[in-house]
Image: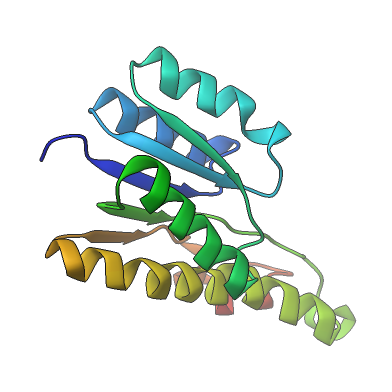
Length: 155
């Protein structure tokens, strides 16, 4: 594959940043997606230091229109999406008896619907190329649970 492109959500820090930088070192141009352009600056710099192009995209993964726009920008600017890494995630920890519906809705919107929105948005460009990989990052909490994280474990 010449000039492969990866799109990584939650690329501003921690696991997402490490994934974006590793993909760049492995020869991928990387679309770095996060909530704000400012938080992605260091990741983009590391991608470029690895000799690859970085596209910085601010997007709320819970917003389908924003996800579609991020994929379109990636296709337009970098030539496609070969690999999608759904990594963005949030927690709103509270004991179940104190958790409200907004806590549940927010975590599900980001951690579950965000993965759906991006996967759906890359499906057509990947099908056109007749190639693509979608990698979903998850947590062991989904298997074993954790105190105060019923919403996170469900997502």
